[in-house]
Each structure stands twice: as C-alpha cells, then as structure tokens.
Length: 78
View 1 (spheres, rainbow, N blue to C red):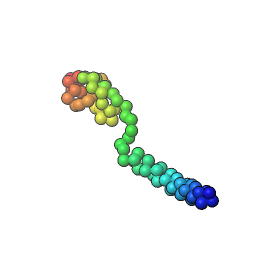
View 2: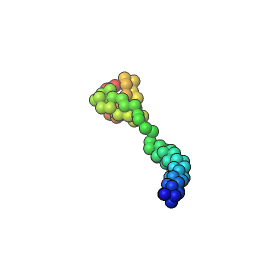
View 3: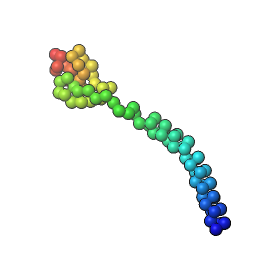
View 4: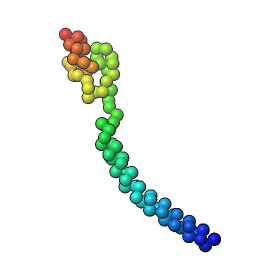
C-alpha cells in the first residue's frame, strides 16, 4: 500500500510538470497559427453588376458600388 501511494505521488508530479510545460508552448503555437493564417473572417460584399459575393478587400470600388472585376465596373458604369 505504501508503494501505491508513492507511485500515485510520482505520477501526479509528472502530470503536473507536463501541464506546466505544455501551457506556454500551446500559447506560442496558437500565436504562430494566428500569424500564419491571413486575417480571419472577412466582410463579403455583392457585386453591383452580377451579384456574386466576394471579400471586400478584393472588390473594385466604382461610383455606383463595388464590383467583382474591372469589366463589370465598366459595363455597369459605362
């Protein structure tokens, strides 16, 4: 019985040490994953000509709205 208690104490100590080591590396891994991923959720906007939704960062600004391509902007605005 004495050895069982010592064995549990040793396993608890190993578990605690591993938990202490994993916490900083998990935080670091999350930060590197976020840095590797571009942006995150993006605002989607419809093209004023055809209605296709695209990320706002890729849309072309025209006088009558946002467009998916330069050709659609020219057709819509003349």
